[in-house]
Structures are given as C-alpha cells and as structure tokens.
Image 1: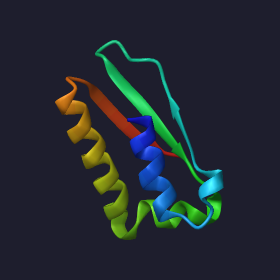
Image 2 (image 1 turned 60 degrees about the vertical axis):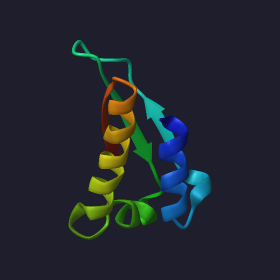
Image 3 (image 1 turned 90 degrees about the vertical axis):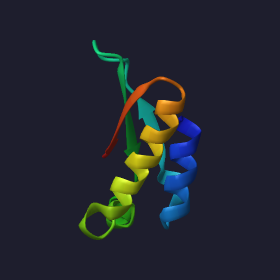
Image 4 (image 1 turned 180 degrees about the vertical axis):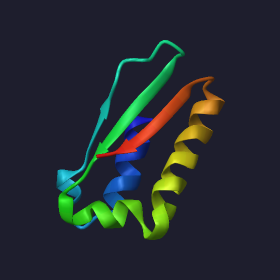
Length: 77
C-alpha cells in the first residue's frame, strides 16, 4: 500500500523527491492511517480542484485495502 501511494503521489507533483508516506500503528478498530507528505508548493496538485484528486487517491487505497481485508485512511499532510 505504501508503495502504491508513493507512486501515485510522485506522479502528480513537481518535486517527487520530497514525497514521503508514513504509516501509523493500527487503531483499535484495525484501521491503518497513511500520511502523504509533499512539498508545500505541490499541495494543490495532490489535493486537486475541490479535492477530486485526493478523493480518487483515497478511493484507490480503499479498493486495495478491501481486497486485503484491511481498513485504511489516507491523510495528506
């Protein structure tokens, strides 16, 4: 999952070397939270107009997680 998020995020930004993904420990309900960190100038590119790109990233992550019987959340920092 981490590699998927890195690949997608790096393809969207101007400074791919500043993209990183961190993972939190699973919460009580089993949800794993992934944090995507990008350069401040690339924040608009990763979020998109009205949050459409961010929503698409979250949808892809949830689709992969469902196939693996997991619960995930993606946050963009």
